[in-house]
Length: 102
Image (cartoon, rainbow, N blue to C red; front, side, top):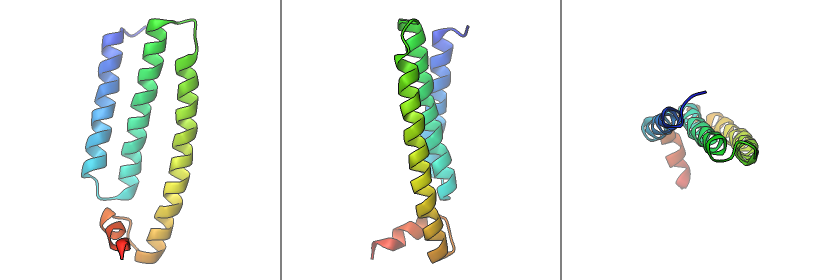
């Protein structure tokens, strides 16, 4: 079993990579992938803390199931919007979305 300290370092590293990717990417698909990394780091943290604090309970795993379902809905809606933006502007960069304000 992985020690708690190393597992939390991994979770925080995933979170930092996700934040960096979400802030620096121009392509919307890359931004969605970075947001998924952030969700996965949160899932990993829930499982780590549940296993460390009370291994008999499954509350962390239940939260992970909710996070996965919310992430799936977010990706479905996001990709539908992305497809609509691509059909309109023929580009999937973040700059095309800023043109939609008008």
